[in-house]
Length: 132
Image (cartoon, rainbow, N blue to C red; front, side, top):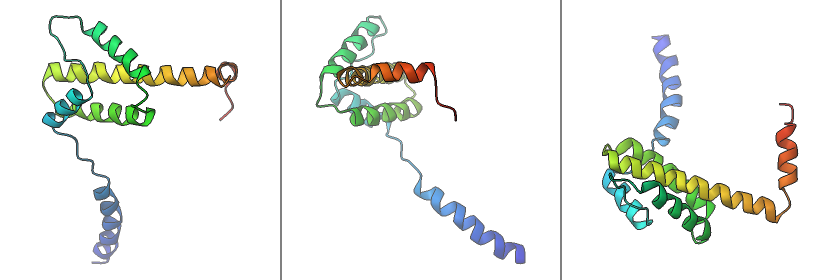
């Protein structure tokens, strides 16, 4: 009985924080609607996909109404969508658009580094990383 009194509070201490961390993944219908509303190209089983997504990435680099934080949120949501939407063409669409967003974000970071003269510092630290 003493073990039960000890284990119950321990269980509650672990279980309550875990319930607050449950994320509700978007449904496949929500994923597809968001991808459409974001202007993500549709996936074609007949090819031409890479060029479409490369163009989409370039468009996203220039579209400053979509901030880096929004790109991060979309990248995370598309990752969830790949888990919940089992249609292969939809999953390919999410994967390629995730890649387009990552490229856009990295290009913006590179532009920032160049504008602020941080490239030399980056290269120096990359060649000689700080000790942990």
